[in-house]
Length: 431
Image 1 (cartoon, rainbow, N blue to C red):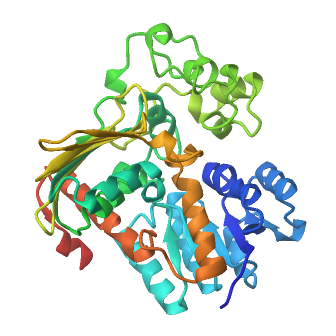
Image 2 (image 1 turned 90 degrees about the horizontal axis):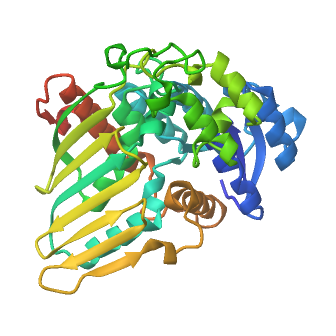
């Protein structure tokens, strides 16, 4: 099927990613992308996108099932629904003839990952997975240094994901990804990004994995004296508690609506974030619950040890317990090392016996919003493929490329639940 600009898209799911990230790019790249249809159960969100991007009323659906039951309405479907909905929506869209942009994770079981892979091959459709960190200039700089041989042969890569104390509380204690049964396990939900870039930077598949981790802190027995079930219900521990919901959503300088923040995370609590709407959400909804009195069960810290097929060692640590979000990474080679901080957007390349070079990534791009600039670059490359070249780029996170991070995640979780035993990736790939 020959395509040309603008590429038409059907967005399934108008949450934070579908509405605030991908739909917004239709106004940034209007000559390349047009929103032809949307599916979203919340009417306010559907109406907002319909009016903002000129989507015809008859092309607005309550569910993805309803939209994909129709004859194909666009070139590409963006699957931006909850993790456990991905497989149903992806398979239906592929069978309807759409190419896909699929939010990570691909699916929450290996069987469903394989089902999507089989369906894409059967229908001869392309699937690009939103492992957006590959597209961020920060990781491009590190990858280029490795490819140039600046550090010699890579021996070890150590990565740390700082989830951030309030982000953990928002998404993984009070929010949509708090429960493995409702969503999926933490490593797959949050860190398949990180596993993907470790595969990409090392240039290798993984041979074996071990992992340790637990839900250490956000449990009832860790609650401070006098803690209430809700942050708005006269909590005696409120003043000293950093997880107090009123601090996070009202007064925090970076996240609170009283400081002028009406985007994420406040936009998850209310369609139109104001002091009144946020206070109402905290008094009645899940985001006002005490973090020690929620129904969460996903881990708050985990370490993953990987041996790649060429012997390179990679390690990922994920932790809630950091003052801010972001990622730091160290690459250690036979001729030099790299130390990089995504929060500061700096990459320091240090050849052994030579002069260190520090790169300020902020000077390389005018737009580092959205996963360090990765969101917009991914969409630009996707549109280029479907609107002009017909071919994926070398770094594009195709279904085949992205599946490796999922194999590692499933292997690591098997290891974690079995006392950290080593798991061979060949066993996971072969089912």
